[in-house]
Image 1 (spheres, each protein chain N blue to C red):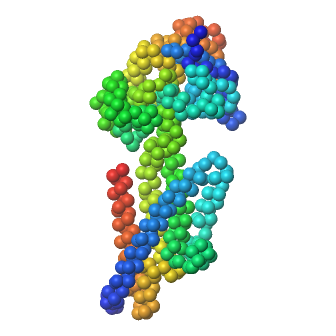
Image 2: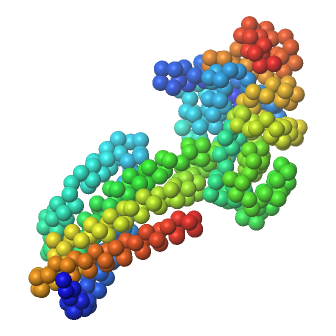
Image 3: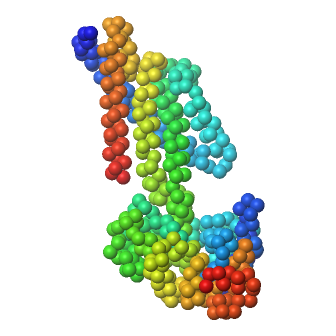
Length: 215
Length: 244
């Protein structure tokens, strides 16, 4: 079998640009998802049913329906009336961040609830408010425990971003499909995609391992 | 008469259908050391934890220096800042050094300058004999050392009352003495203390008053000599015959 490196080379600039967009969308979604997830996680832990029920419903919806379906809904039904036009990148970031927020909310919740209640009691007994106890005592310990789970979630998110090719987001996998369409070859484009995604996720997991050790 | 430091009236608390505290009345005077003894499950820890609202009472009133904790206007964080607590399992913050454990609340809650808080923390560490451990991680301490740090941490807030919840129960026997020694010193300095413990020697030697609790009630109370040597209640006699 001949492997045509020349067509990969041909597409290298587009693949590079697409990879840039993959990284950009993933990074933005991870950041937004982490912030939304924190709010949703705390909402779900709240004692008030007015708060914890909707947050539970949110989590169930986003975990219980396929990402591609969510992407279609955001892209065709939600974003156009808001922006007045379709915007694939906006839909992509919204979908991925809202989806990952649901998973991250559960990671936050599990992390926070895994800390010995004695820690919170000690903080309270020293006159700290709930917020101070969270900020200085619970979260610093919980976040360290959350890192491996966050790592999994970030990796899943990067890989899932490939699905965005189907709402015409010009990220990396979009150009991989284009390459396949132009040359009618399968090994070169898909292997290239696999290698690039692997490099992205593997570097990320190494980075997180480094951070976890440093904490 | 001088106002009591702690006044508890008609305190009741249930977990589900299990009544843990049945109408507790208690007064603790300034500089008094009250030791609470009793079998496990008698409600003594729960009573102690109600005194700084780590447990929410179902009924009754608790006053610290005349301020009711049940009053909606009372800021519980302010009351807790005045009431130190030492736990059975130390509950040091494992992600920070011994020194940071002690200075965290003075700096964040009392808004003390960091240098001042650290100087005070070092002084307290000297007091409990652990000045060389200031930069150590809590994980590296023995149980006895950890508990002494926990006492220093509580004292750093300059509390008016100290609550001790079985402070030596999680310790190896050879480490009990060093923790009790710090507590004795504290009592001698005039700290108001409520101590839940199984250390009958400590109760007898340091306690101004001993309460015997069983099944959520204070069965008997009195001067340690009285209570240990001539208990009036059958249940007290039975308990003491098992532990002494």
